[in-house]
Amino acid sequence: MRSLSPLLVLLFSPWGWATPLSIEDYTELLKKNDTEIQRYIHQRMQTRFQADLNLPDSRWVLSLTNSHGIAIGQAPTTRRTDISLNKNFRSTGTEIEIGFNKNTLADRQEEIQSVQLRQSLLRNFFGQQNRVREEGLSQQNRVTLLQLAETYEDYMAEKLGQYLDFVLAWQNFKTAEQQLGEITNIWKEVRQRKQNNIALAVDIYRAEVEKIQFERNLIEAKQDLQRLRKLLMAQVTTTDKDFAPSKGVPLVNENILFEKEEQNFLSDGRSIKIHRSRISAAEKLKDATRRDLYPEAQLILGYNNDQSRRFSTIISREEKLVGVNFSYAFDSSQRGAQVAQAQFNLQQAELLSLSQRKRVTSLIDNLKDQITLQKQRVTLIEKQVRIAKKLLRGENQRFKKGRIDLETLINTQNSYHVVRYELAAQQVLLARHILNWKVLVDQLVSSELFEN
Image (cartoon, rainbow, N blue to C red; front, side, top):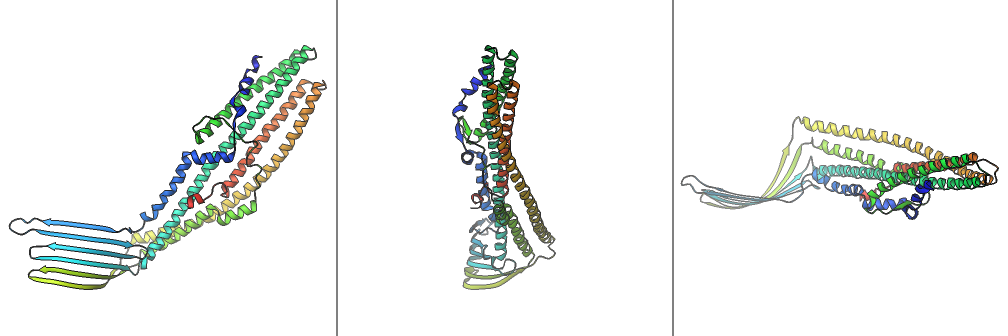
């Protein structure tokens, strides 16, 4: 009975009462506990301030200057105080400055209050350049968020692929367990026959060799199962609770509406949105960069209140100010290069979009064929398993009645379990194809988590 010890160890393991864990439950645990997923979700926050980093500062800026001049010799000291408050309204291209200046010099005292407004009329006509650039940067941010969603989806697909590995290991473990149980029954039957002088000692040896091999197979299957279980549990929880996949292989029975899902993806899929946004961003930024070559003209409106004493004259004067500031940079080779680079970026985005669409269309066609053929293959193997099971049941009855020999029964049993192993492998392969389809047409992860 020593050869039964591995079986007894396995039968009394925690796997007999393991907690069921469906692929949906595992996905939820990943979202709650996997730190890498949390990192992806938090990365979206970085895009909230990207536009502000590349646009004029729109904050109110307070500037204070207070200086004292200490004379050398008998000359009196001087003092100067400057206070200004500035703001750039980038949506309208308007700048406003409120100032107060007070100077105390040897021969005069000056106190001037001023308000000045500058309005761009050419390059940044009423904020148009800023708005165009902001729209381009917003599209760039959208590309970043969508690409982050793609990366997150790829990561989720990788983890769910590990879950499918675990499902296959579980199916193999259960098959190996059943296979060992069946050969053990045969071994007991042969021993009973030997005691009744119906079987030979060589028959016992033959059955025992098979039983030992299946015990070894079960140990290997359990070792592989434990390795994958620990890998999954390390990602979703800190407990060491045993769990098993839900009955059957997930995803294999999903009804895929190929044409509808393909049409939805090609019209509004995530990668399609990425290329649209990339082209839109390149167009906006090219326009904004081209405007940098324009001359600049600003309308200046202001008000000054001068309350000063200069020498022996007291001045009290108010004035309204109207003017124009004009500037133009001659031979701006750097700006010209930036415009050329922006045009190149736009052309690259357009070409990449066309290339990506062709590539994705080809991948969709190939994956549809793979799924369709794999479903047919699984259907045939399922039929083969059902027939092989009936055949094995019949051969067991014939063996008990002495109509076939031990070798024939063992070969029939092995053939049946080979097909069972093959069925599990092909079902998991089908599930992988369906998982890849969901990733390809953006059905695995919603973009809303990153776009909102």
